Amino acid sequence: MFIAMNRFKVLKDRTADFESVWMRRQSHLHEVPGFKAFHLLKGPEREDHVLYASHTVWASHAAFENWTRSEAFRKAHARAGDNKPTTLGHPEFEGFHAIQEVTADGTARRLG
Amino acid sequence: MFIAMNRFKVLKDRTADFESVWMRRQSHLHEVPGFKAFHLLKGPEREDHVLYASHTVWASHAAFENWTRSEAFRKAHARAGDNKPTTLGHPEFEGFHAIQEVTADGTARRLG
Image (cartoon, rainbow over all chains, first blue to last red; front, side):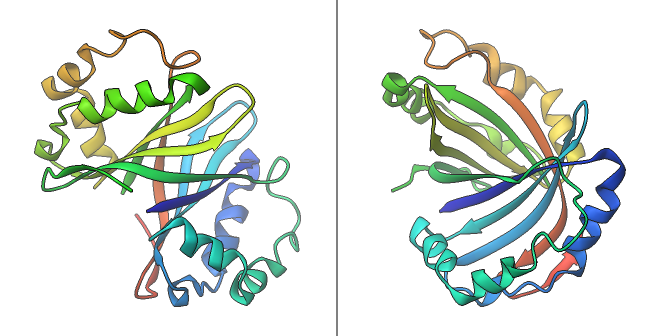
């Protein structure tokens, strides 16, 4: 399991616009092999922004990498930046490999 | 859905020790109402550390808050800091409310 997150510092008076861009977006992620789930997350409010994060769970790092090399990825990002900025600077990408798991039934295991 | 993350800046020569503490830990999270899943995540390597994150998915923010007020929480954190430090400074907590979801079957929806 691999989690791809982009962190966005959203201007405090632009959060509604930021959210609305995501809500209007047509997602094709579910057509991509290895896609598990996408969430848009609203995080803590800080001095000059509210932290948001896109949070995509992939079956593996390879599935994520295949997606970034695909036409679907190119299309999904082609219009990024069309709008008046709602954020401070660019999003910050962080990719995470899951190395340990505890599931709701109490199973704990080290992951590959 | 609420995601609770703690970000750890792990010293580059202490990653094995950091991981081993987590692997030896006895988790009781699955006994807590509203617990969905826990993952320990290994993130990007930076100049003086490797970023790790604990990543716990809760059914709701209320479920997370109830857990932080419980005896189980107190016990789970009682021994934190017993070991020789493996990190730069303290972990940084970030809590995230999921506001939009796309699942593997292509269902997209705004959340509560």
